[in-house]
Image (cartoon, rainbow, N blue to C red):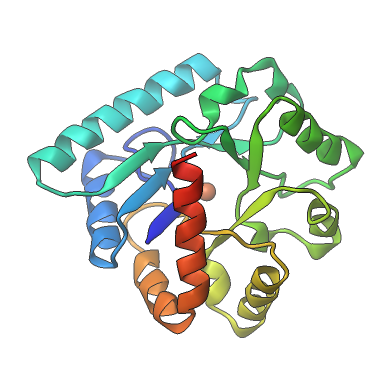
Length: 223
Ligand SMILES: [Fe+2]
């Protein structure tokens, strides 16, 4: 499996407070059969300068890589970010926030404000820059807002949490059936909950869907 959304880099955001936490997260992932983890620390343009974020991410990534080698843990970690869509975002070189060396960007839509035409136009603006937005945890947003996103030629990531209740699982199945769910993510924060056990469980139940998620992930990572 590929975890397409995870907060596993130590001391880069609130997802992991230490190298020890990151290693525990990754051991859980590995046990569940995850081979690649797209590491997506939060990037909020109003809280962080891009250069400081990139430096912090690089330090977290390097320390984790060294620890993985020292512990003989064989998991691929790909540098990325969960980029919150904000008005000042375009002052940055968005390519630097893309997943690995790709032109794909994991984009988090606002959670606590109403979306307006600016938000939809901003997605078009990102596409015009040659960057392919992937909407993070599409299961979390109201369908009132997402229906306009589904008209666009973009990709969508779902969190494993969406499989846990009957109604949200039905929603994910519908998203997938309609071509609006392309990647699965743990969105893991901390080490106290194990979303990877759930990923393994639902992979065995919805094998075709999870195989498609994996294929889509490799297609992006190798693009
Ligand atoms: Fe996240």
